[in-house]
Length: 610
Image 1 (cartoon, rainbow, N blue to C red):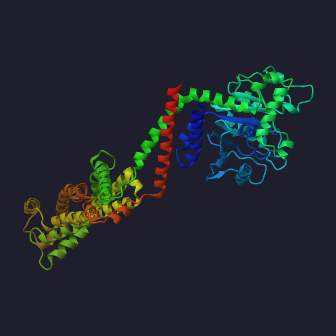
Image 2: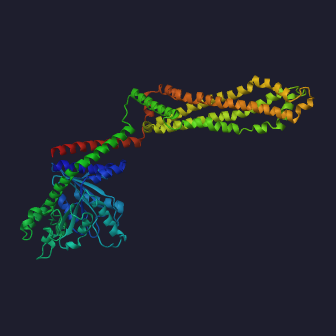
Image 3: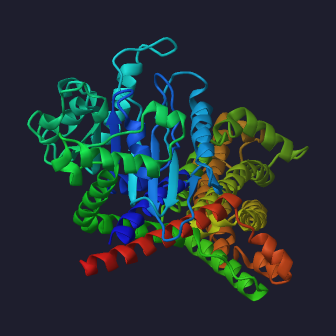
């Protein structure tokens, strides 16, 4: 259970960190926080580093005076079956360290890369995993030592910055706090216990560790603390004996140090009765056992979160699309399917299932009437202009009754003004259809993975719309020209009757150019223009719908289909060249999905074995 369950959690935590750069950081962070870990807290020079090295069984942490740990170190221990020991950094994934002196140097160098060669701190963690037969499966987080004052080279806020950083880790309800305090100092002044009590007042998540037991004044001991009389925790206090500075200078290995530690407790008159529950080896085992129990209690919640993340990843993978086949037939099928999807979305916009098509109706119902209303017929049919056109049409022979040529010229010159609104209706419809093409392209999620196909499809659709616009414009202008080519007979038949009712046809020719007569001519032409305007308000929209909207629904991609049907396999592959960022995203999602599915299966098997 220990190797399987805790090792599995270690792998998930490491994967969460590795995948955080590829999106979904919120979900990854949530999963990370739901997985239990052990944070090591203590004041500067309290012995934190020695405790960690004792648990690992290797001398690998930087040492020195003042603040040495300036970035959090997430240390994942993996128990192996063979004797081969090595370490790996997350920022150097392809390099294995077998020399732990090199591990110490890399921790120091990686710290300097972020903080510089100063005494400043950074919350950006370093991730290190150690694989060894001499460790227990654990995730330990080494945090900068708590301090009370800022020294030379540090900002005035360093004390609060370190405390806030430590607090950000240990206040999480799934974090186990390893509070390290030196035995040769009063426990009431312990920085570690002080901050642990603030975030864990009942002591349910806190393990107290007393270091430097061998450095206490002669005649004194730490039994009051170790036996819970000075400060009681739910979990028993554990004492450890670290290597002395002389041992470190002489490079005494951890095996010898552990042996000396066992001998110290076995022979100590003060702590001999506690020897079975003291020492760094026991500390590692009790932490691992407690961590296992915590993980067991969290299994339902962890499984629920992993299942949700699996669903989210599979949904995103479905949106991104699965990898493509290599044969030309499958590629052509994929292209055609994407085109059909786009075409369906485009038609839904026109038919009202999606917004956008209503803008075309607004052109017909609002813009066209408004444009016609603004035409300068009042100026064109003014008394002065009517007199000029009628007199020019009469030539040397004044008209007798109705100035037919004058009427024709007035009507023809008036109808020319309708060409502008006719073209404007066609152009406005075209721009709306273009916008719907681009909107449909953007709403076709599957197309986003193929920039080349997306660009070609957009271009082909717009070119088709331009051909339809040209045809529609010819039709619309033809409708206007038709009105100018033939005038309604009934309109002219009424003119003599109007003249008989309103005037004397036998009057002198000079009367033909009176204001009343010219006003009547302008009024008659205006009435005819109104009639034509009403006809065009109905016929111009019909032309736009027939030549543009209906044709776009029917054959927008017909020419494009003909062109891609002639292409070879290599050309089809070029159309389906995916965005490299999208391909990388799919790879990372697939890796994460594989990890989570494997984790779910392993956790399920562990849960059933309980």
